[in-house]
Length: 60
Image (cartoon, rainbow, N blue to C red; front, side, top):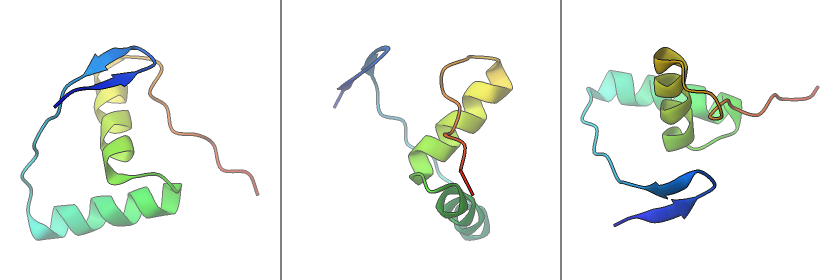
């Protein structure tokens, strides 16, 4: 399955992780008010130096 995004067609990626890692990622995504996928993509993009995938800044 592919979906069209602002920067082209995307591809699915399956990640397997421990329950503890999954729970921690879910918590951080919830704190950032984004999906787990969006949070994980932002981390990968930041690590690879690919701009355009930053999380929105929360306003107080």
